[in-house]
Structures are given as C-alpha cells and as structure tokens.
Amino acid sequence: MEEITVQHPQKSTLWTTESKIAYLLLFPAFAVLLLFMLYPILYVFLMAFFKTNKLGNIVSFIGLGNFEVLFKNKAFWEVTFRSILWTVLAVLSKTVAGIIIALLLNVEFAGRKIYRTLVIIPWASSVPISAMIWQWTFNSEFGLLNQTLKMTGLWDNPPLWLAYPKTAFFANLYVDIWCGIPFMAMVFLAGLQAIPQDIDESAQVDGANAWTRFWRITLPMLRPVLLIATLLSALWTFNDFNVIYILTKGGPINKTDILITFIYKYSFQFLKFGPAAAMAIITFVILLAVSLLYARHYFRSEDV
Amino acid sequence: MTRRSLRFTIFIYASITLIVIVLLFPFGVALSTAFKDIDEVYSTPPYWMPKRVAVENFTHIWEKYPLAGYFMNSLIISTGATLFATILCIPAAYAFARLRFYGRKTLLFALLVVQMFSPIIVVIALYKIIVRLGLIDTQLSLIIVNAVFTLAFAIWMMNGYFSTIPREVEEAALIDGCSRWQTMFLVTLPIAMPGVVTVVIYTFITAWNEFMFALTFINSTEKRPLTVGLYNFVGRWQVSWQYLMAAALMAVIPVIILFMLIEKQLVEGLAGGAVKG
Image (cartoon, rainbow over all chains, first blue to last red):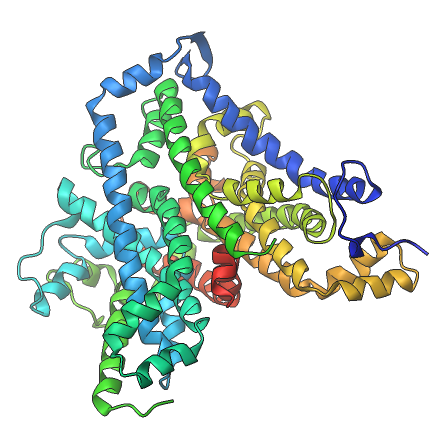
C-alpha cells in the first residue's frame, strides 16, 4: 500500500518523493510567471540604468542618469505628489463610505439582499467601460450630471468637470472612489458579520449607546479587516490606470497624471523609455513595500 | 432581534436608497442615452426620459460598427486566457494545498505579493518581449499576458479551495488503491469544481475587462477587444454617444451577472482569514 505522506507533518526536505511531485506540479505555472513577470521586471531594472533609443533598445550605460533626468523634472515631482494625494484621499473616502454602507447593510431589513446586490454593481462593472460612461456623464453640455445637480438645486453652477486641472482631478478621483466603494463595503460587511453578536448585545444591556458601541467594540474588532482592506485599496488606487487614462488621459496638460499613467505616457507617447523605466522602478519599490505589508497581514490572519 | 422604532427603519431605507441612487447614477445615464436618438442626445438642456424610445440603437449599432467583431475578439481572448490560466493554476494550487515541499510558504507569500504588481511597471519590457516573440498585434499576446497577470491570484484562490476539502477523502481513495495522480484528477478535482468555476469566472472577467495591454499590443482595428474598440469610438467616429452607451451596456451586463456569482469568494480570497470569522 502506498504510504500516505500527507498525514505526517514532518520537516520538509528538498528531494522527497512528495517534493518532487510538488515541484513538477508547480513548474508550468512558475515557468510562465518567471518568463512573463520576473524577467520583464529585471529587464526594466536594466533599462533604468541605460540610455535607450526611441525603440526602447538599450544603447549605453549611464548609471543614475535616467534618475537624474527625472529628479530635475518638475513634472515628475508634481506627479509623485499627486499620486500620494490621490491615493490618500481615495482610500480615506472609500473606507469611510464602505464602513457606512456596511453598517447599513448589516441591519436586518426587508430587501436587504437586493440592496446588497445593487451596491456591488460598480465593482462588478468593467472599469474601462464605466470610465467611458462617466466621461459622457461629466460632459459639460449634454451630460446629465451637471443637469441633475442644477435641477435638484444641489449645485446651481457646477464646473465644467473635465476642462480644468483641479476639477478634472476631482472628477477622476470621484470615479476611482466610486469603483472602489463596493469592495470596501463588502469586506467590512463580511467583517461585521464575523463579530459575535453577544458582545454587542451585552454592551447594550450595560447601557452603552450605539455611538460608544461603534467606537469601543465594532471598530476595534474590525481592525484586522480594516488594515487589510485599506492596504489592498491603496495598492489598487495607486495602480488605477484605466480611470485616468480614459477619462482625461492625464490632461489637461498632464495635470491629472499619476505615476502609473505618467510611466505609460513617457514610454508609449514620448518614447523616453529610460526615464520611464526609472520611474517604473521607483513605483515598483513603493508598491513592493505596500504589498509586503499586505501579504504579511494576510498571512497572519490566515492559517497557511 | 430587538424591536426598532419606525424612525430608525425609515432612516435605514432612506440612506441606503440614496446611496444606491448615487452608485447607480452613471448606469441611469447610460440607459437614458442608449434609448435616445441622436437629436435628443444632443439637445440642451439634457433631460432623463427619452421622448421617443429609440430601441433601434441596439440593432443599428451592429450594422454600423464592427461591434460583433469586438465581441468575438473579447470572447476569443478571454476564453484563451481562462483556459491557459486554469490549466496552469490547478496543479500548482494542488501542490500548495496538499503537498509538503521546501519553500512552500515563501512561494505562496511571493504569489500574494506578485498579485499586486501593476502591469504598467513591466509593460515596457513585456512589449519588447512580445515583439521579439513575433506576437505583436496578435490576440495570442493578450491571451498570454492576461493569463499571466491573473495566474497568481487564481492559484491563491484555488489553493484556498483545495484546502477546504478534507484530506480523509483522498486518504480513502489512496487506501482503495487509487494512484496519487488518479486521486488528484478523479477524486479531488471533481470535488473542487466550485473552486474551478470561481477561478474560471475570475480570469474570464479580468481578461474581458482588460484595457491597457490591448491598447498597447494591438494595432489593427479588426483585432481589438471590446474595451479598446469602444474606447476608439470616442476618437474615430463622430461620437454617437447613444450607440456607445448601448454598446457599453451590452458589453457590461453579462460581466456584472457573472461577477455576482463569485463576489463572495473574491472578498474572502482577497481579505483572507480576517473576514472568515
């Protein structure tokens, strides 16, 4: 009879029969990941330290030259600062909105399931297509957003959203937040439902009001979920290419670009592959730091 | 459940309804525009209800634009990417969930980190690789990159699913004389079918929605998937927004329905033990 190795938790060594099978099973997936993910990353690292021509071919070693070009460029600093502002504002808004929606959906009421489904729709939709719909919605002349704002008396004189740097930034930001809210709401709702009811009930018996219970019980118990969700959301927000590229293409005059869209423009529009690679490396380091944090917390929460 | 006051109930309904209206606003706009004719679309001030419901938008668009081609391309790319990613992810996930080997935790951790990388970081280098492989302007290039960029999370989710299947099932099969491979493919995999379905839907949707790679790797109009095809509506033709909105709705509704099927698994897969209670 074949021995059932899965039963015995033993210190794993490299070449047991079991490991051999495992490596065999892992090989195709990891070969593909190495070829199409790791290799390109290494290649970008290389490009960042070389002069490149307009075809993206490596010409000569210039050390930190590309980084120097970048650091002297005022636009780069503006875009970096904007990326941070973008991420902070969006994640904060998504978190607050997500918690509010989750609290509402955590109350039992008739039709809750339908509302829950409706709330998910922006997330379920395709981001590029949503962005195109939003572009039309924001249209200054024929768009229904400004018309509705006027009609309802919420805003008598709404701006031409996509025409000016500041308003275009907020329009982009709003769409990104809109896309990201449902995920936050669903994670927090799942988190809320995992909190044992009796704790809240006993606090209620002890006379704590809803406000106190939220700050003293619900929020602290949501902490692990909150941490993971905000880290994840920060990564997605920082990486949001589709919304900005489709809605404003980073314009007017690059004033709504964030690092991710700027890298793309630098490479495929300006054909400055060297500085683009340098920017990609900087972005990579930022993302790696946040991803590591996310993965660590995930591993802590999960028994793997 | 404690009894609630009527005021509280009204407050809940009012708030959640308001939120839903705000969240669904652009879809309302899309619906309104998709059923207007061109004169109504371009009238100021704009209004919500079409005076005449222009159902013909939904048929004309297929005749006037290469929409069927875009749908077909998206279908080919998404199906290809899904097959590719699923075939690669199942054995890898099985190894993570069931076998002990050196480096298991490190590799799992790496997958979770890698999953978060923006494709933009590598797109310059990938572009060069795709050119060198002679795959530029082919749908195969998109099949590959879409599979690659969904693979890490697909393995991760599948690993989670395999882990929920009790080991006893496999042990029983082994005792009954099944080989390890038979056990894997004939016993465990069928039980893991719901997990496979999740992964299939996830990769399909992600590939269907992908925009940046398609924008970069495809030059020929007739090879474009829906996202880029529709995006080019805006530039190429005088924008007939009623057609674009009709097409957008048709492109997005199937995806929304599919997504609803896997939403819970996605939340659990992304947020981990923190939401599993």
